[in-house]
Amino acid sequence: MQTVIVTGAESGIGAACAEAFGATGARVAVLFHNDQEAADTTAQAIRKAGGEAMTVQAEVNDEASVDKAFAAVEAVWGPADVLVNSAGVNMSGVTVRAMALAQWQRMIATDLTGAFLTSRRFLTGWGEGKGDATILHISSIHAYAVRAGGADYCAAKGGLTNLVETLAIEEAPRGIRVNAIEPGMILTPMNAKAQEDATYRASLERNIPMGRAGQASEVADLAVFLASDKAKYITGARIVIDGGLSLMQALGA
Image (tube, rainbow, N blue to C red; front, top):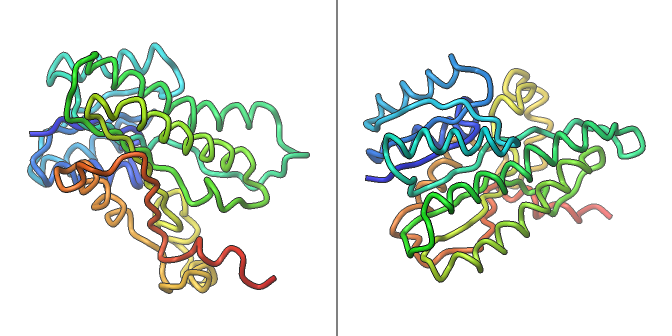
């Protein structure tokens, strides 16, 4: 039975991943920022799917909070086998010349430093011995397919790529695999307008070769696969799940 920690698990891709691991019979720790009710809903979905669940509040950009959250999980279940880092902030559309330093720092702290802090605490929980463990970071196609108004987000996700690849090299001798999942347009609360406005969604989906946005459950299925024995030889990978959207970036010019 796997023990899985999912950050940002109160909604979107994080919640979908938590439920999908629950369906495998895993013990899943739902790490959430500030919405206890949403975290409880995720925990209920995990239990309904067949897994065990607990909820733990955590600020992923705060070292002490991350340590406290992981210690709480370890006290009940021992070191986790899987970390899914899904906590993140979406791009705001603000250009660099108009961007406040506080906005830049908030993005980097959550989407990049948070990934560093949770990865490091996951690894220290394992100690120096060899193990069968997996770290999965939910990144984005915007780690390389940049957008105007997304400098902070794209920089954070680009940095995450290098963190993932470096960790993969460092931890491979211990049997710990580290990979990135890079979604494109996924219908989650981060894309609330696309979820609620069918006309707006269709205008975006015209740019996707497969003609539709993705579902959080599809990303979750990929996460479960990457943490399974069927993916034991995959590490340092950046796996795109975007219906072909990122392939369109250089067309039309």
